[in-house]
Image 1 (cartoon, one colour):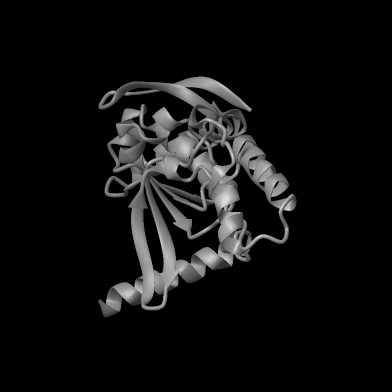
Image 2: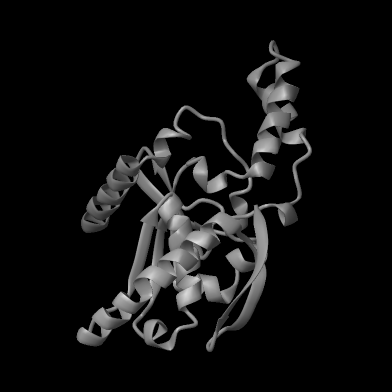
Length: 218
C-alpha cells in the first residue's frame, strides 16, 4: 500500500511523493523508540558519524528513516547516511531520484535480486508475461524473448523503487562489475535461477567480500 508523504530538511526543502506505508510506519516507530538514545550517544561522542544500514526489509526502513532524520539538525550534521542492501521498493519515482534521497542514501543491488524489483505492478507484469509465454511453449528462445518484450507493462507512475544512489553489481568472468543506475531501471522482475538466492544475506556478504578483494587488487 502506498501513501502520500513529505520529507522536509533545511538543505533540500520539502520533497513529497508516494511511499510504502508499511516501511513508513516502521520508520516512524524506530524514530520514536530510538532517536532519544541516538541523540544522547552522539552528544557523548562528538566525533561520531551517523550511519543507518539494513538488509531487505531493514534496508527499506533505513532508507525512509534517513530521510526523516535528514530534517533533524542534530542528526543531519553528523554526516548522516543510509546504506541499503537488497533494498525493496519503498519510494515513488520522484522521491527515489530526488536530490534529497541521492544525498542521504546509497543502495546496493546484487545482480538479479528479485526483492529490489518486487511490487504489485511488477508481479502483474511477470504474470502477464508468463501467461503469454505459456501459450507458445514450443517456440525458440529468441521468439519467447520477443513475446516477453512485447507484453504491455504497468506504468512507472504506479510503481515504487529503491532510492538514492543505486549501485548494481553483476558478475562477469573477469570479476564484479559495479554500475550506478537510475533507480527506475529496477522496474522489471527477471525470472532466473538466482533471482531469489541473490537476495539472501550471505549472498550480499559474499558480494562485499569479493568487491573488497577486487578493490585491493586493482
